Image (tube, rainbow, N blue to C red; front, side):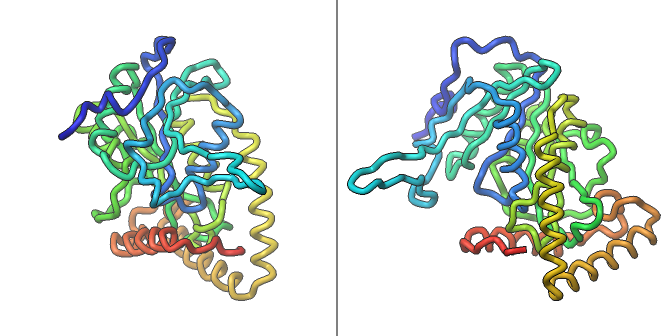
Length: 307
């Protein structure tokens, strides 16, 4: 027997008028090459901060046995339990404009009820645009401009971003379902997938997070501080360059990707390969294969490559 989606969440009684606000969302557990979504979310939480105005009932949504929360054991007793949280935070950009951040573990079940619950909050608060973000692995070198794939419930929302010219089936996610269901109901929703070099997909890659962060800012009009994220990207890139220079095998891979990238850019007379060129986008089969492989590696518990 079902239950009302309103039973999935609790909302604070002192939420201000949020008409016209933007809702950003990221859920841990699905594909996130380069930890792109996690890094963006952590940056927002640390640099922008905010307060929780809604909490979801994780006991109804999370399978604890598939993702066991960490507990700390100290000598002879349990000292701490890191309970999972799925919350909506109210934040403000540098101009004082309010926006919302929905984040936490991706629900393991009741996806439709959860999507309906998010829709209820969108309508309750008068949210004008919902935006998701994460990273996807791509066969592109870290030494060239990164791309970002945009998708939306209306073509106008995609803007200057070049959509993929392919039709494909990929593993579903709650984020994608939310965007899909909101679109069916006439709400504006979109998402950004930052491209991460496949050889860095299992490592934290701040450059991809910065790319997604910039795309979010342009699409929403929010003024968001990116200083710390930009610094982290510079530091990480310098370290990647150092490690690549110390590995002939990895250096060969990077050089091969550079040649491929430069050839495509020259032929298409574009500034960016995967971000702008239709003719040389990877095929649906190639993308689907990369997505499936990346998800399999995550589920298999493989360690991040030391690159």
